[in-house]
Image (cartoon, rainbow, N blue to C red; front, side, top):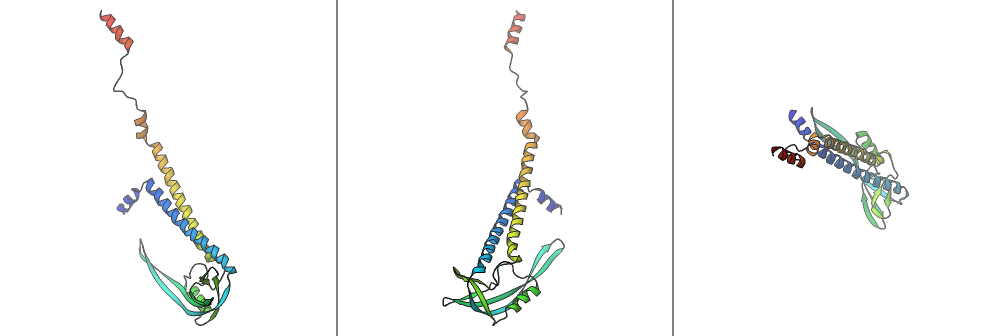
Length: 207
């Protein structure tokens, strides 16, 4: 525990500034992805559609673990795996995106998507006319479409705040450092130049 505290104290203002800027850069990157997703989601409302067929429909379970202070914590997520085929200009395409937004995390939500698109069902597929390989089954935006943008903005603001706080702390410590002021203002007492008038007066008294 003491070792961890020591390692944290070694991170100076410069290190905290760098950490904050990196944190903000990651947030900006996520926000850019979110903006692009929103733009495509809005544009998909005007995409043309063709008939397609569901060729695969399943629910995938994934488990991950994270190390915590009280041990490892496991989390389980569920995702609906939907694959469909459609034809545009006599060219067959395969898609797996249901809509623009986050994937399901709960079993009930994933099963609801899978039951909505069972294997063998005929569906309407909406595709990008400029890139027919990109298609969705549900157009427009939803609440999950805004998640990447929101997360990116939060990360960016936190990173800029941390970097700003570290910069102010560094500036304050450099101004308040007494060694800098003493070095610049301390007078030189090791040498006192002679006064010309006093020297001539002393010579006159000896005579």
